[in-house]
Length: 96
Image 1 (cartoon, one colour):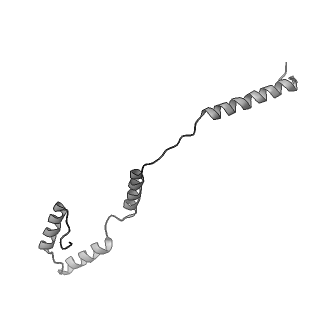
Image 2 (cartoon, one colour):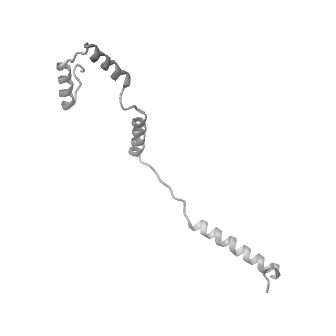
Image 3 (tube, helix red, strand yellow):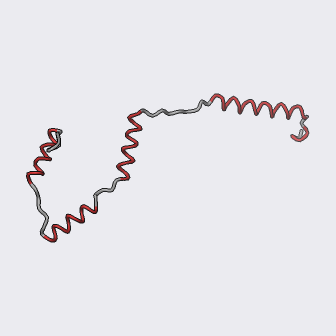
């Protein structure tokens, strides 16, 4: 028997069953969903900010490099020590 010679009713039933099967397959597959916490959103924002920030402030690096070359760069050891200690204590020197 040739496929083309099937009665129209049989072809119609076949098509209907195929559509019902596809609908059942799609209905059984639930949609996946993901909900991000506030902390993960904050982390995402921080990561984006870090990626957009250059590795070094090149304008500052060039200024210091020029001062070192000219012999005019001075280090304030007391200010550096204050900041180091403030970092361990958790305070900023000179700020109340």
